[in-house]
Image: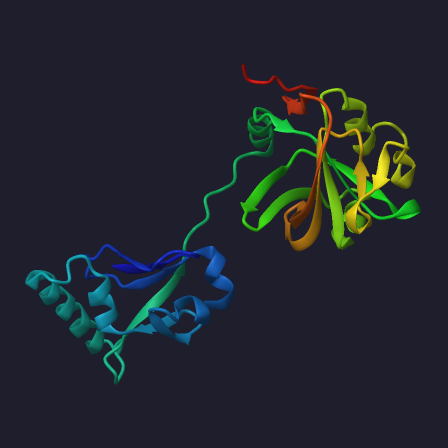
Length: 265
């Protein structure tokens, strides 16, 4: 049997009738701090072992009310005691294991799958004057309605990355169906860079965040949190303003092609 500990989940007992094995199985996300990871069910002995009280196992077992299970469990504890795996308090020594992580799918297969997901196109922008910066993104979604929060994923290889992640406020401008050129401009495909990409269609919004006045819709965010994940930074913002934009259709990225969305009938 083994006690399974996973991030954000209640500890559970697997293989309750297997009295020949006893271990703790950790989610890889918990492996960095094993003492904290096992604290709800055991006390860490050394880096690879922990002490578990028998009553903890009994409480977790779905078979704990059966006499035959209790008999088998008692025999297991007795066997462990003969080998020095039970301490003076009657706790059982369990080996700590880390769950294996399935291999990731290949990059080409992943890209092909994600290209099949139709998504809106946005320009994330921050800064003032000559310090303005922006980046075209498709990875944008809501996180929470109360409080209102959204996230965008920013490529750390972009020249605008440091500016955007360092800004206390920024805008996310959802592009309209006719704004393909704006998307390409802020994707670095039109030759202009940095503040040179901002023209008269941009204005200064709340907390000095640059707003694209011709956008389909815009939101202004105050930075809430950010996390580095592989090649990108996940930027989470608290929405402090929304700006109603123009047009009935949005710009959509599907199969790597930018085109207008279609309103449902």
